[in-house]
Image 1 (spheres, rainbow, N blue to C red):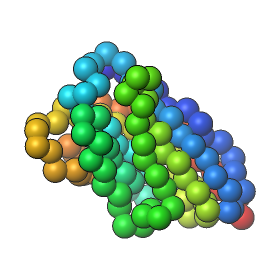
Image 2: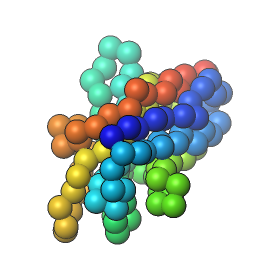
Image 3: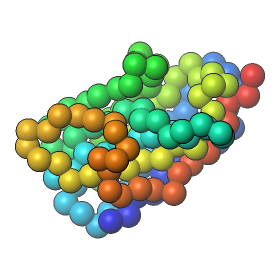
Length: 126
C-alpha cells in the first residue's frame, strides 16, 4: 500500500490549496481515506475522511465549511480542497487509509488508520 501526498506549499492567509493523495497497492473501493494534520509542537489531528465505496464523509468541526474532501475512484486519488486558509492551518498534512467494514461509521481517529503517506507541508503566511 502506498499513499503519496502532493499539492502543499506556501500560501498567503485567505488563499486556497488543493491537496492530493494518490493511492496504490490495494482495492480502492474497500477502503476509507482520511486527511490529518500536525502542526509544530502539537498533536496530530484528524481533518476529514471519505469512504471510497459509498462516499460517506466526515469533517472535524474546525474545518467544516472551509475544507472539502472528495474522491476520484478512476484515478485512485482523494483530494482536500482548503479555502480561506489562516496561519493556524499551517501544518504537515498527511493522508491515511484503512480497510473498512460495510456499513462503516466515518471516523478520523488516527488509530483507525493503518497506512500513511509521508506528508506535505502547508505553511500559511499572515
